[in-house]
Image 1 (cartoon, rainbow, N blue to C red):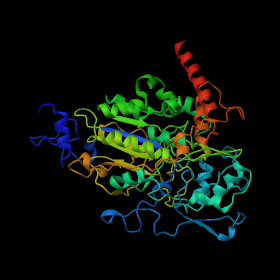
Image 2 (cartoon, rainbow, N blue to C red):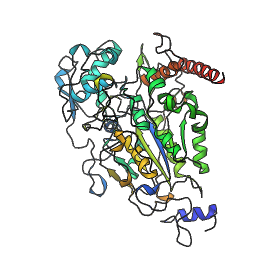
Image 3 (tube, helix red, strand yellow):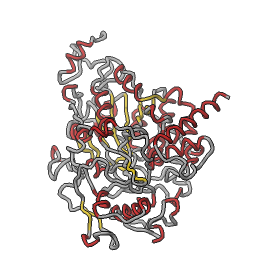
Image 4 (tube, rainbow, N blue to C red):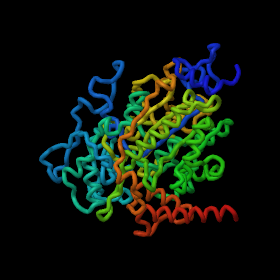
Length: 538
């Protein structure tokens, strides 16, 4: 079959099937139409610190899911968390799930480290002296009951939010201040992610890998292991000792292509910092900025696997909750993340290269690294330890439980509109999917038993571009769209990423008060990058 013209592509794309005049599939498009043959290129966007209920719990009303599918949301359920007896307005008894439109709630940032998540899951503070301490100062058993209940009651989100608020703000919160942890957005508040969840596949039982924070979950996303680390600190662990093999390396060894895309404003790609012992030598060959991603999508030159990092610092679009320091609140609207999702989705939707990557053979997966302390009502299940023979990791955790449920969407021409996938999935389901598709073998015991995503691709004929929705972003407030937040205080993730960059130079700690604002962090990271480049030339 000869090379088709752009006119032929446009003409055929308007029909029900992407086939040529002779009835044969177009070159460059996935040909089976089912299972793991439905894509040749995969793009994964991992955002920050939102639970499933927080972002998508209201996606469908009670009984409103399409095709009589079940949807595990918040509608029609009497969901709440108890208020501790010594809190303001404790006479209310509970904080129910409620819908709001404040786009940077929960504000300030909740606790997200393992001991905080234990309180959120089990409602316990053990020992009581842990109540208002930083996670690194807490004592065993780090708020985790013994024995650990098989089904966590999910009743400690309010308790933990109040405890952490007192620690960070130096005073008890009012009811209005602590009730934000139970806010769940309505679809019209987050129309982009909601529209894509409805028009393609939403996974309503997708759990993060570890009941803790960013670095360990992102490490599991790429390596099905964190080499024993449970929280972000100590930063030196990641740049020196996190030596688990990554899916990037396995893909490359199979002769396939991969790239990491990050925002050039961030100076260092976070994924490389987390896996520095394994990925440091790939920076010049496999790491690119988002400008290159949009070019690659347009030109049909996306790799077999693309991993996208959101912008983490200046005007960050990762959806991470904000912080407050000395009365100064960091702006952190999730509308910025909505815009990022829209731009990436549109880049794939409009890609129509006759060869290479295009809308017909590219899978887009969108998920979040961890729940970030935001409320969710579904108890996490048990999990297979990555290396069962290894001793327990930080906080005596054996990596035998999943973390809290997070949003996850799958977008592909071979996915039916209105698909709900209620199978238990997790970040390593993506590793399992790529391993099964490309015969890569498993990385650890965690991804070996994970469920792949083949059940999502049920169409035998791909959806043509005119069947893909055009998503509309809410109007961005003028002060947010034009604002540079370079003088704002650092959130927890930004401070941790800075800690990784500094650890490259051998400094495990920043001096108290040394770095306070976003612009100071950027300047320090640029200094560290110059030092790294100078060392590389020696």
